[in-house]
Image 1 (tube, rainbow, N blue to C red):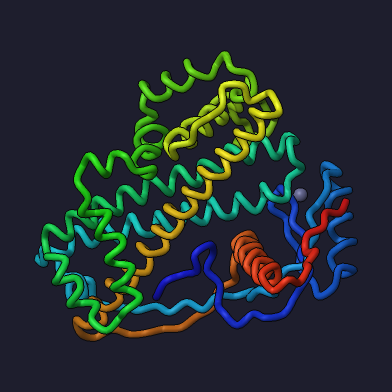
Image 2 (cartoon, rainbow, N blue to C red; image 1 turned 120 degrees about the vertical axis):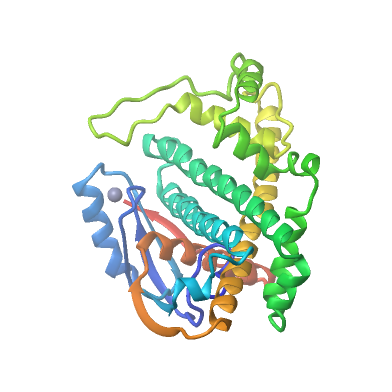
Length: 352
Ligand SMILES: [Zn+2]
């Protein structure tokens, strides 16, 4: 029940290499050699849109996850008359929603990586990917609000006492607590709050209007396209997907060039976008990580300390795209390390 990895959770200990094929539709296969996955990837492509399937060598990953479950009497483990219980239940709800929206973002990002740049699947998945991030901001904001209530009910010191001896958890608590304790004006300037208010919980009219007015006439920003399909759920309004990207960039403080369709404009746009996404990745994903680490341990410690409980261990299959997200992050870290050590590594290849 403790914390998860920064990008995607996966049991540690995987050290070998494997080959993996991944398609933008979400299909994956894995095997020990390129010859084990290549033909399957070609067959998958031929049976479908004939789009390329991404085939690459990545660190090996576990196929199953161990689940530790703690069974208890609710009235005893989290007593209804305890003032801390209601805000804690809110915090538990929001934390699970943070976990699931982060997964949606990471899993959709994997599909997007496998899509042909600029193709239809890529364009549809871009909007879907940012939806995962928007949801994550909504639930993070809810979790921070629940934590603020909890710290108003029992003091931060009382929470620290409960977590005595758990150094990593206390550190995670200090991070999320400092955000919860910030005043309203400071909070309203954060990326998480802006995204939650502008483009998830409220779709705030004034910000939608402000950015649409500013960019509708500037070539290169908004994609004048809407789609239709014979399959429900696949249709997206590309126009508003590109507007959302502008809203996210604005919330991240990016300064967008006024002529993005020139070489200088494109270069400046690329720099700004990379800077903004790096800032988002540095702020949002670690915050989600600290929140889950803290809340998971707090709940576990409380329930376990309040009398009889029964522990059970089981294992479940890991969803293939979640596995892929972990493998991609592990490959990125390994490449970073070999670059630092001056060793080349041509891990990624795309095949049809
Ligand atoms: Zn496919």
